[in-house]
Image (cartoon, rainbow, N blue to C red; front, side, top):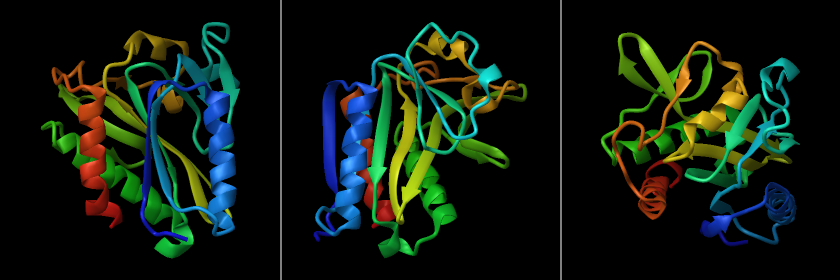
Length: 210
């Protein structure tokens, strides 16, 4: 099995069931030693996903977009055009089999990638994802993290808001957090393209994951 990371980049919106089927197959192939690690960068059409901790009351408009139940951790998340999703399929046994350290590394990866656009993203105790201080005590979420691990192979991953329609988040309570809002790079005044964001993600990956 090769140790090199395979980067997949999809230009069009990928249907969620198609992405899930690919991840399921790739995770099993990695587990069997028949395929190497993979990061898939993509967009989805507008949809909501429900993690294993999702509360029905947090789905505010259930008929607005398709809703998919998924085995990743976390609660409700929106995906749609203008959001860069990275599905990360790694053999964690070769990386110490430490789930907490893996999530920390995903956060660090995003922090470093966003820093390339002079955006300071930060962790917050008790809140999953990455946050940007907006002043006057306001904090908005710029990236979500939801992972699943099977036989110590990871899948699902991160969702970084580049220029999505932020109003679409209004159909859910994102990640179950009502006290804070959602932002994006464009909302903050930074206007990179998705390919430019992809370049930042690929450039900072070896800084964190080797």
